[in-house]
Image (cartoon, rainbow, N blue to C red):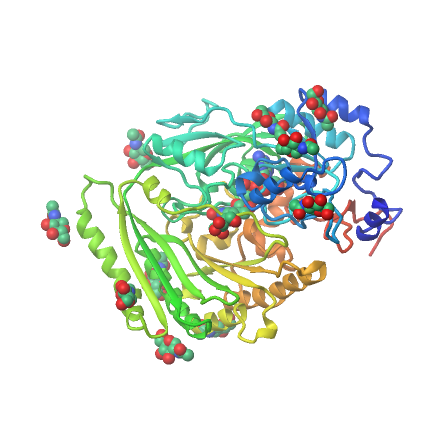
Length: 604
Ligand SMILES: Cc1cc2nc3c(=O)[nH]c(=O)nc-3n(C[C@H](O)[C@H](O)[C@H](O)COP(=O)(O)OP(=O)(O)OC[C@H]3O[C@@H](n4cnc5c(N)ncnc54)[C@H](O)[C@@H]3O)c2cc1C
Ligand SMILES: *[C@@H]1O[C@H](CO)[C@@H](O)[C@H](O)[C@H]1NC(C)=O
Ligand SMILES: *[C@@H]1O[C@H](CO)[C@@H](O)[C@H](O)[C@H]1NC(C)=O
Ligand SMILES: *[C@@H]1O[C@H](CO)[C@@H](O)[C@H](O)[C@H]1NC(C)=O
Ligand SMILES: *[C@@H]1O[C@H](CO)[C@@H](O)[C@H](O)[C@H]1NC(C)=O
Ligand SMILES: *[C@@H]1O[C@H](CO)[C@@H](O)[C@H](O)[C@H]1NC(C)=O
Ligand SMILES: *[C@@H]1O[C@H](CO)[C@@H](O)[C@H](O)[C@H]1NC(C)=O
Ligand SMILES: *[C@@H]1O[C@H](CO)[C@@H](O)[C@H](O)[C@H]1NC(C)=O
Ligand SMILES: *[C@@H]1O[C@H](CO)[C@@H](O)[C@H](O)[C@H]1NC(C)=O
Ligand SMILES: *[C@@H]1O[C@H](CO)[C@@H](O)[C@H](O)[C@H]1NC(C)=O
Ligand SMILES: *[C@@H]1O[C@H](CO)[C@@H](O)[C@H](O)[C@H]1NC(C)=O
Ligand SMILES: *[C@@H]1O[C@H](CO)[C@@H](O)[C@H](O)[C@H]1NC(C)=O
């Protein structure tokens, strides 16, 4: 019964296609082979079970456990603690509902890995890589599961990096692991193992009086997809992207060998892993990151809430605020803003920006620095907003000073929930100085397309447009040995829109919301900023121009590095470098077996 449903919903590869082995294939490794892998990795091989399996009829059905799972299901840390917990699953095929009575009895792994190695070091990682290669099994790398770009894997073996956590090391002055390698960096550094999340690294850096350049959310992994794909956050404007901070990496290659990648050794790999994206060049065990002495911070918090559910006037106000962003950023403010509409509620714009202040005791007069910063914000934004306060909008604005960067960070919550089922549709785009300062007409059209007036066009129950004011400043300085999308070096703001489909959408409904997001909302963003591209970690997975949009002119160079280090495609992920030549054969389920597309004799 189960198998029949499975066959109907998944795509079926043609008899000729050369595919990675899946559990329904004869070539899938035998129980004996898996057992032998398990002993190689010291008993740390996990046969995965869907998170909410106890909610469903059958052997593991347990009402108490199901209730506990339902309560924690949206919690990022709960998802992270599971070898197959993802914040944005391609499709949740085991939602925690009462599976004993509802009409949705399916509970299977879906796009999640069949087995995971709970790796504790290089040897486990290498054993997994070798096993996948020798047995033609699809391989997935999983850290926190914050992936948004569908880099998950039906029928795969996953290497779970979460528990690779050697003690964090602080180096007052960076000392390269290869002592013959001369570094130009004479500041401090932290050595971070693959399993740490930013919350832990921030706290450790703060104990040593330093700032690490990391993500806006506490639970994002420090060294995994985030770092290798670029990495923006509250400190990127001041110090550059997170990938720009990497001094060296320790990497397991497709051969299973462990190497150092730095400006002295494996330089091409080092450069590719500084912005070219995780999951495809090798598996990173640890990274050494630049850190900076902490500074006091001035925070500005603003909210502009419409006094009715009508969003049109708020869109107009938002365009004016957006046009002031470059001035604020050039004056040292950075952070995150958002425009949110939830069906039936009054829409609102809000932001929380911080400006790093001169270190106390240094030359500048801190109170005059604060005065100047506050009056700039007041002149640029508050003067015009105050005149609207009470007439159509409610406006609040506050300034607050923090003694250290960590105090500033901790003053916000930074805890995102895992997505509801189904996951939201996401689209994003880079904006430079000009596309914000001198582009009001186009920004208006963009906001109108993202927040359509006519109810019939509103397929999403909520839309959140996030303004990541994380560029400018040091992000604009090109660095040697990076593979960052060149568009980043012009970027002031990254805009990201999330559309939440109704819970009862069904596969067809979800597909519609996603198609609408790509064809209408992403297009409106592209019209407003046609050439810059977007951030590969937070991009629309369905962008038809993904190669150009995610990698810019870096793609062919990156692909040559990929071919050097992984010619057989042991590491493959969706729309990562090296994507071509492979395809997931998906039915309506959006996931399926991974097959080679270029058959010998296929000249199409
Ligand atoms: C709630 C939320 C908040 C976010 N906030 C930010 C933000 O502020 N700034 C920002 O820049 N991005 C942000 N992102 C995007 C984030 O950078 C990406 O989703 C990133 O890929 C997450 O990496 P991870 O290792 O934590 O997650 P995972 O899902 O575990 O990993 C993502 C991919 O990276 C690869 N990978 C993971 N670990 C390794 C490794 N050790 N070696 C090689 N490859 C590896 C794998 O291909 C994997 O599929 C956010 C995402 C979410 C869901
Ligand atoms: C691997 O071995 C350990 C220890 O013997 C065992 O607990 C675990 O269930 C095994 N994993 C699999 C997938 O068989
Ligand atoms: C169900 O799970 C709870 C909590 O884990 C446990 O105490 C209980 O024994 C389980 N019940 C059955 C019938 O297995
Ligand atoms: C789920 O349905 C079964 C069968 O009707 C019932 O026994 C059980 O109490 C229900 N559980 C919940 C959480 O409602
Ligand atoms: C994974 O391994 C770590 C030790 O490295 C252990 O603490 C943890 O419980 C393991 N997790 C699972 C799900 O096996
Ligand atoms: C560190 O490097 C900077 C920039 O190259 C230089 O100005 C500074 O004097 C150096 N400091 C030390 C202690 O060497
Ligand atoms: C939009 O805002 C501008 C000032 O920023 C104002 O002149 C104009 O009347 C507003 N238009 C609408 C439709 O509210
Ligand atoms: C610093 O600037 C403030 C405001 O401009 C001024 O009142 C104060 O006297 C200055 N302090 C010093 C030490 O210069
Ligand atoms: C807006 O008006 C309210 C109520 O009068 C007031 O409390 C608030 O401070 C005003 N906001 C601004 C930014 O002036
Ligand atoms: C996350 O979920 C919890 C519990 O459902 C809820 O109380 C909280 O408001 C949510 N947080 C965010 C940021 O959505
Ligand atoms: C951004 O644009 C403004 C106005 O066009 C200009 O004055 C400013 O210098 C630009 N900023 C940078 C860093 O180029
Ligand atoms: C809007 O975009 C178009 C095409 O990119 C451009 O020609 C036009 O100048 C832009 N309009 C404004 C007001 O900047």
